Image 1 (spheres, one colour):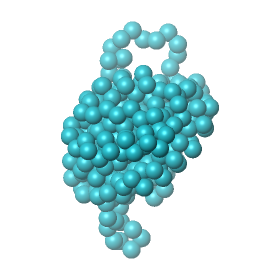
Image 2 (cartoon, one colour):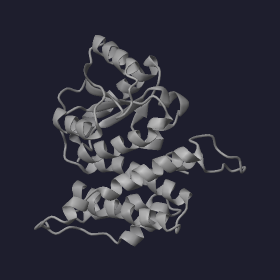
Image 3 (cartoon, rainbow, N blue to C red):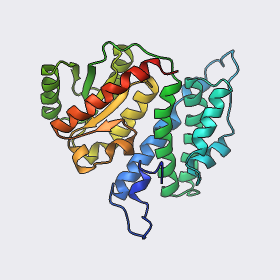
Image 4 (cartoon, rainbow, N blue to C red):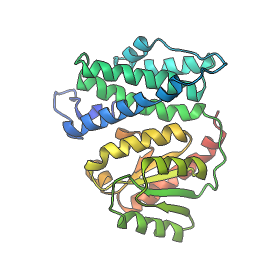
Length: 275
């Protein structure tokens, strides 16, 4: 159960056969679908482009997929680490490992060859791997360690809470850039250019789960070193939302947000120097 807190924990039974509380099955399907489909699209445009001159470490996708849905919670991570040790870059691992595996898993799921449990487990492990991969990305220099981007999840029009939070944090010395009603593409561009060490995403309800998972996956690819924080009512109705969507922290009330932001702030020096 080590790496099952993401979507799978909600459909796993405990040692006594009792169902665990968590995301409803429909929400799990949405989350797993979005993670797999979003990652499956990575690299498709690059595949039709002129191949790179340098050699690329290519994995055995069938073996990697088996690791993503297998019993050993550490096998997929070990394969990624082995590929990196053999010369695969952060981009290689995203485009030539995670993306093809997601495409293969999506086909297996569509053909009913793997179950919801399998696809949810794979989605959760991929989200964990995306977080692990930031340790392999080049160091970055943030605009300021006490700076953050606060934004609503695309399509979410509940802006009062995140606006008030931005004002409160500014009053406490944070440099907060607030962006409302921006698309996923716009947010990705803002994060790539902005050098924000922390990105706070606000979502009002589980109806925004698909948009939240989609945005986090894209932000992880575009800016792997960032720390992602989830707030809003979704964090109240789903206490484990951070681990379920691959974020680094979550809280719904202002005191919880303060504590989490300070905790994430303490992680920034290590992220700046990690390689």
